[in-house]
Amino acid sequence: MGHNHNHNHNHAGAFRWSVVLNALLTGVQLAIGFGFGSLALVGDAIHNLGDVVGLLLAWGAERLSARPAQGRFTYGFGRSTQLAALTNGLLVFGAGLLVVVEGLDRLQHPEPLVAGPVAVAAAAGIVVNLLSVRLFGGHQHLDLNRRAAVLHLLSDAAVSAAVLISALLVAFSGWVVLDAITAIAVGVAVMFSAWGLLKQALAASLDAVPEEFDLGQISGELLQVPGVREVSQLHIWGLGGGRVALTAHLICEVNGGRPSDSLLRDAEARLHHLGIAKTTLQLEQFGNPLPEHAIGHSD
Ligand SMILES: [Zn+2]
Image 1 (cartoon, rainbow, N blue to C red):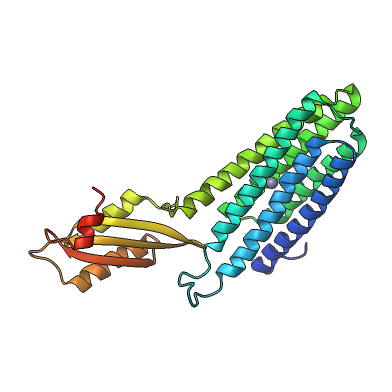
Image 2 (image 1 turned 180 degrees about the horizontal axis):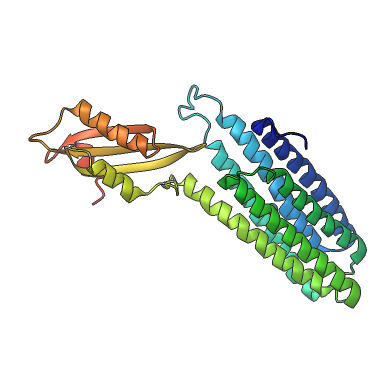
């Protein structure tokens, strides 16, 4: 696809092609899956549909989260990325469950299947995913996200390959139940990957400490600040788009204590170094807690 003279441009191009190719593939697979009786192919299509919707939601949320904070939305719109992941995870999980339930039903009531078109559509799935790997993996330096994307595309190609093999076996053996078995396996795989996504999105919705941060390490770092004796009410949560907020009460030495502004600057610099830019710290004197601190203390 020409020269890679502009990294960002190339990335956007790869993204757009990936969406268009996968959307076309989804449409073809759904039509052939329903038209020629292959539930396994429908399962593969539903997975691909989840990928397309996920890509579009992530794209929309990224655009939305770039908008500045305004009015009542004092945090901005960064968490729309979490909402997008949650919505997509729920949709895909539900779709995978439907395929499994329908597959179990077809084990008992097998339906006729025309293997030829199903095999062609499954082969198309392999081609599109391998083509997408080329689009995304054309660079020498793959960052972690891209590597995950490439791994995902390869596993998608493997799912299509399973559907293709199943269709060929049905063509040779006439054993149509194999399609239902493959569909159940595909449905379980879809539910499994959606569950991973859902777990992350739910944790973020519950304001869990983002996975890349270590609560103990951050609390230890604050205790390293000269003059700080205890740390309480420590909260760390994601604002979306990789931004992280922290609030904490620092309980300070009474005697030989430092001026509070220098102590605060020190603590903020350490947190900044750990990748936390948005901090709200409250200082208290040891042995003289504030009323709300006494009520809200957890230990
Ligand atoms: Zn996928």
